[in-house]
Image (cartoon, rainbow, N blue to C red; front, side):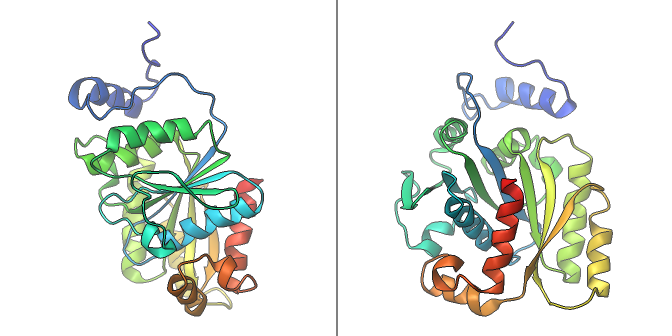
Length: 265
């Protein structure tokens, strides 16, 4: 009694079995903490949709609003944040990269300690923004023994928001539809939002309708829009900086500012 919380869903039961019997060295052991942070995970169902761009700039905008924010590169197989921001050493440390903004990286070699650090961060920061990269086989990952699944399992139990960044191409929408079906069939904690990236300005099109059809498995999810602005995105990448630093008045930056404001409400 009191050793662990009694499972209330099938997913929690599987996590308990898996954690205590199947992968005890990976399971994070921790004392009870008082959670103060709101945790937002950013992901995508297809490559090239822009999840890392959104994660970096969402964390930046939250920090500019005065919130103590931790940006976490959780894509263990293909980390990118340290390269895009020009900050080395994120794998072994939590580095302050701007006022109210810190960053770190999850690695395979230090996975258990890194997951414990995430639990601790929930009582040390006001916002955690995780870049998950591309999610494949969502349902299978929730019960997998592979190390790559550990962060997704943590997010399914601890995050407040799971945002899927997507383009409106045929392949991207089909892959999004598949991931959302799997999300709907499993009990996960975070609410789900869709961030429509690279949207061409103007009236609604057939692609907008296709996107609406894609999110049907998650009826209460919302769609947030980010305009097509490759010039601003490229400038930020070239300068190892955020959109705020290269062009604070760009349409791309303003749209992510609005999304940060919604999450901060």
